[in-house]
Amino acid sequence: MKNFKFYFLMYGLIFTVACSSDEDYESAEAFESLNSVAASGLCTDDCGELFSGNHLTTSSYHIYPDEDFDVSCVVNGGNVSLFVNPATVPNRFRVKDGNGNSVIDSGWIGTANYPGPWGMSLSLGARYLRFTKNTDNYTLIVETATPPNQTDSWSARLSCQ
Image 1 (cartoon, rainbow, N blue to C red):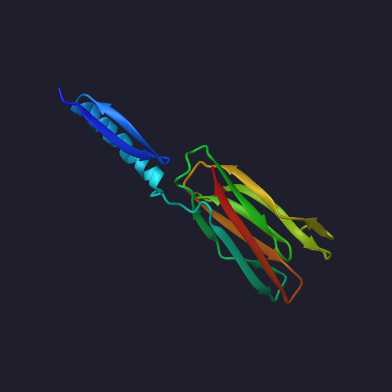
Image 2: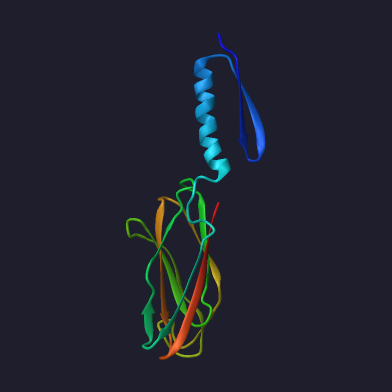
């Protein structure tokens, strides 16, 4: 019978696993590999990413290029949120999953004293869009509707738990 001591780092702490057989050692080694990936940050996705855009709208409607994002480091059923901010004029923020299914829609938010898809006026500020992860890849779609020759800008911060 072999005796091994196995050391690994997880969450900034050093752990020791005592193994009395090759089988125990292989199990501990596999566990350490998985945890070293998580602890060292090797699992990379777009959590924490800041998306933004601006556009001089010559007509009254503009849809921005899609912003694809990956949340593969979040467990299925985990929480994902986007803090969306229509900085200058109204925007609509939508998220679709990798299959094109609608996940969440902010509706039109921002400030406007002119009519648009939101009605005669609008006064709804920045907000969180929260949803539960069920796939690794999503798409953020942002639209704007402004008076002619006005610049739009927006931002969205992705956070995951």
